[in-house]
Amino acid sequence: MDQFEYDLLDLEVCKNIKLLHKMQIFIWGAAPKGRQIQKTLEREGISIVAFCDSDANKWGKTYKEIPVISPYKLEKLYKESPKVCIISCIFREHELLRVMQELELNQISFLSYWGIKTACVLNSIALESEGDLPTYDEVWMYQKCCALSCFGYPIHFLKNTKIDNTRIWNLQPGKTASKTIEARLKKAGVSSIHMHELTYPMMWTDALKTMFDSRIQSSLSQGIKIITGVREPISRDYSAFWQPFSGERFYVSAILNKDFQVMYEHYLKLLLEDNDCRKIHLRESRSDIWQDEFKWFNKEIKKHLGIDVYCYPFNRETGYQIIREGNIQIFIYQAEKLDNIMPVLSEFIGTDISSQEDDNLAENKPYYLAYKDFRNKVKLPRSYVEHYYKDNPYMNHFYTKDEQNIFLSRWKDCIDE
Image 1 (tube, rainbow, N blue to C red):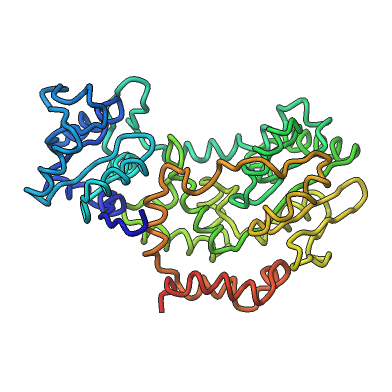
Image 2: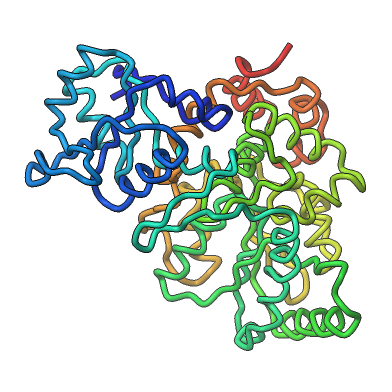
């Protein structure tokens, strides 16, 4: 698969969906996803040549007068006219890429289902309904992101009556393998609280704040174990940037732009400013992940629990540290070494979670192809790279200089000189 070359259009079409007018469009998959995209594009004046499907029972049939053809017919048409674009509307796009490779459709233009959906959202195009598929008749804008922020993790903490008896807190900065930990805990039957922040929204009433603080103190009095982690910061920030584009709703208010490089630069600028502007924008758009992960420990752990993790030497060689202070025990790990330290984390929890499969991997994300493509093209401002890798005391606390050099070498071709 690595030697098979295709032209992924996800990012370019998000910027300019009119590119599709210049191509012969084939939709792979004659099921609801394919029919949804067909109806949406034709309403926008983008015609579809045919559906293509691996199911031989569908060949020769039509949908809305559009024929369903075999992959072999598509191969012939592509060789006659190279201006063919395939829009994938199936669940496992890697299977489609393998078929394309077998048919030797090299350099063919390819658009993922995530790509066409995101292009519609960013270009304010409402997706047509088809079965139970979401229509995207509106983009979740600033106000709705604000509402989510105000009633997110803290309100969950207040409403969950079982929290007082839960000893394991999976309390972490976003994008540091917290979902992997949570999934393993759940499979092992371990009750836990999964949160990214203990900071409550500023708009809460004094009564809510008092109740929230009381619930925390009640839990602390009984003793808790906190699992938290760190991750190479550029990789973490990169993953955090993509998080708003991962689900069935898009949180794009603070960085709304059709050009992903421009969006990314805006995002990094807000992270680096770390002032009132950042607080205003990021607080209402994924505040749980759009922040410097190293400063998170002071903002959440030190402020609410009174423990300064930076006062404890972190074992950078083993990749984990256990802090014990009063009724609180904190297990801090490097995400890069998580597999190796699962046995000791299991011992800390009191249940073996070391032998389970992880399904929260990048290649399982709907945006994986665009994610990987942009990872190869992204330009990083030098000021941003130096923020983490030039005498950053937090970075030095968790990672050795050798580790930092290895991490930085992976991004060296992306640094904008």
